[in-house]
Length: 162
Image 1: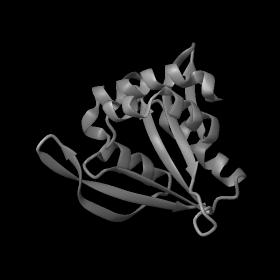
Image 2: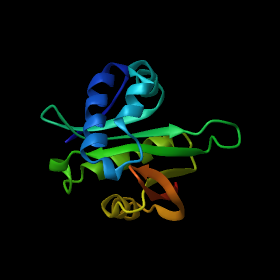
Image 3: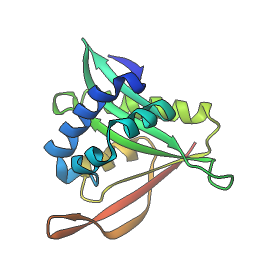
């Protein structure tokens, strides 16, 4: 398995995988592919140019992706946000997601970030276990944060000091 940093030229392939995640495992994410489509490919091209976004690749197939954004502003730029973590079902349990998370943390350290934050659906036990293995700590639950049809679901907020 190799790790590659994605850039603007990877936007189309990235969005295909992201749509697979959001539509195929929609209960695990707060995002929706309709929201991504509304933002449009140019917005995502800019994000891939700006953020640190990585993929685990094996034999040309993307197995997992994840991104890191630095928060903006002189009072917040010591923090980063881990976002868009996804491993294709066949790659779960292979260490691909851990490889992405380790790479994001290395990128954060190289940027001089002091801490990372992330959010996840509170009922996503698999993701929570991954983050806890990497030293992330739950610091809050936002009640009824995400609407899934007619049901409102809690979101967990986690952080890690680098």
